[in-house]
Length: 441
Ligand code: SAM
Ligand code: SF4
Image (cartoon, rainbow, N blue to C red; front, side):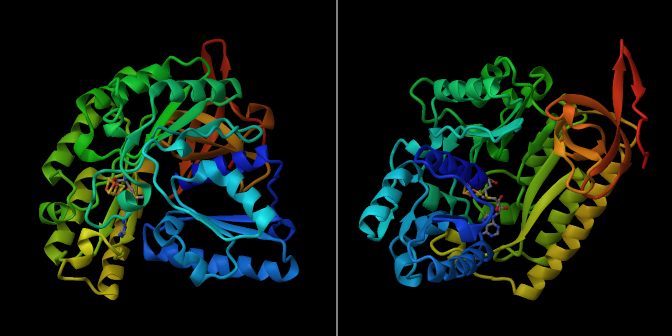
């Protein structure tokens, strides 16, 4: 979501004549888009801002702005903490960037804009795809109403608001004419899409409408709240051919007691049932998740229930985190805080287990033929192309650059923890044959 917010910021500034540079020393303006989800993210932002501040010594006219969730959280306090900041803007004020930059350039005054807007203007900003890009993010909603006990998002991104479908369809149609083949729909809880709209549209209906847009070949979305994952959306994995075979479904914990304390609104049994349904309608579906260890009061038994859940489900991959206390959240006042070494130990075991599961899942794909959207040249070898399977796995294989942007059949020859190795399959009439030109490995 932050990556997409940054793309929107760059698009707005491009309209004002700014160009991006890979060399920060040449910049006239530096923007830092921050995250506040865990303390580690906030600390990273402070140290980065320290480094950026040093550039003002060489270039006193340099303009420095900070946006995102940390900016929303600190507001004008940010100016007191870090003197060299020129402007601070919150999550609902991206669209005011050109106006803020112009004011700072003209008057050299310090600015803070962190007010919330009921209908957030920042979600519909069109970011033209980068040259050669085939995949794009599209925001379909903003904010969150769930108030999970550990999470700052509802406080920093405001209440949930859905973007009307007409604007979404228009944006995706424009992206398709610019060469985009794959869209990832973004929202904190896409399953409740439509709840705030005057004319109700469900998320499943939205997916169908997007599926009808010519040129779009793949649809992805993130994130899905397990409580609100509807039967209609599950069925889309069988009926909507353009919907990729992947769902990111954050479970957070496998213990009913902890899920209740987290205010998640589902039980482990509910979650397991939904996973079963997803696998019934789409047997090849890849399921990924988020897990927090060391939530206040998490006993060894609770933790073992999370491990048991992972053994039962065997996720394709997970993002796992040590609980990080956030000011103002409900969990801040809960008793039974877990020590850092204990959290670290729980996380380590869980991540080792996940690595074994990911490796097994990837090995199961060896010998299979996967449709791969070729994104570009591989970072690891100049001879290789890189693409993703429908299930969101990275595949590297030999091939020439003319294939970039194509959806192609690739035979998986070897699996690794973070990627797959493959071989291009060439269509000859209706017969598939392996493309064996070049060095094999
Ligand atoms: N909206 C999504 C959902 O409902 O799962 C995820 C939003 S959050 C930006 C991404 C992940 O960060 C969460 O799923 C959670 O696992 C993790 N997270 C959020 N707050 C956290 C905290 N205080 N400490 C550790 N992890 C946290
Ligand atoms: Fe945070 Fe929960 Fe909302 Fe996700 S659903 S953004 S975890 S409050």
